Length: 188
Image 1 (spheres, rainbow, N blue to C red):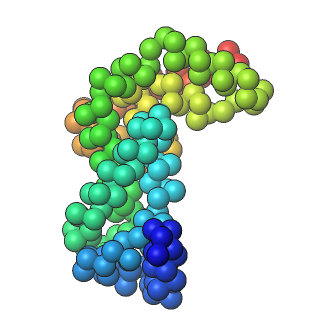
Image 2: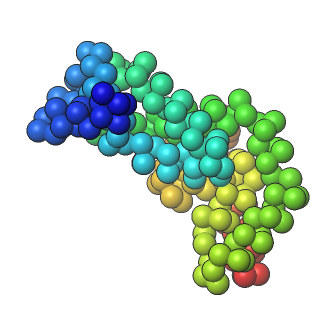
């Protein structure tokens, strides 16, 4: 059976089970249950990874890292919150760690040539303002804080703890992100 066939079979096997049963099966090492969980959450995980990294390839790699960590750490999930909430926190933490490891690569990504290419691409795509194209242009720390606070709803205290920065720095980075976005959108 192909890998896609395995996923379909796993999804069918677990279609009638509750999410709690599915998670319990994953915690017990059931790879079919894991494939079902992967299928259910890959879109959400990738979306958050993309918003945090600002780059498709990095987001794909970070999402895969999230699911590797999920397999390793799913035993830590105790059901005290929704699984999606727990996975969101895992995704944020893993992606932020991944960004730190890739910092040299990210600095290359934000060079002047790339910014010019992104501007041309954004102008050519449509006349409407695409906030996401601007968010990915933000400097790393400002982008992370903006995504976590404005889009994902974390408080500055939580962001500070996740990113090892002071609460004031989180607020400052958020303000910086808002100012840059406002400036870029007003020039549209």
